[in-house]
Amino acid sequence: MKNTDLLDEIFSAISTRAALDRESLRPVEREIRARWAGDRAYIRADQSVERTLSILRDHAQGDRPAELARRYKVSRRQVQRLVRSSNG
Image: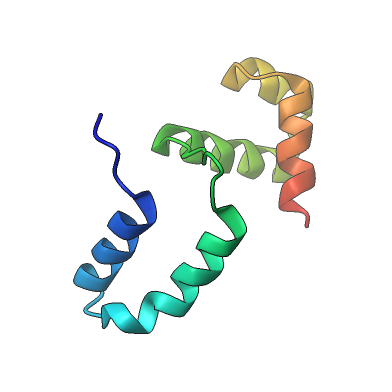
């Protein structure tokens, strides 16, 4: 895998697809770089996003964490973390 600057790739894609001037995005890019410089970032797969939304939806409908953990093959603690983090 080639060593690509992820932020550069992301902001170029946003600029192109949203028809925004690349320079207008620079302040946001600088903020992100200042916060995350040198760190490794985790990029969650789409499947995880969909699963998380499903867990939160089912929990909001009254399903218990233990039941959700079995259904989605995650730990009960993970379900509890997702619910807690979604509540602010």
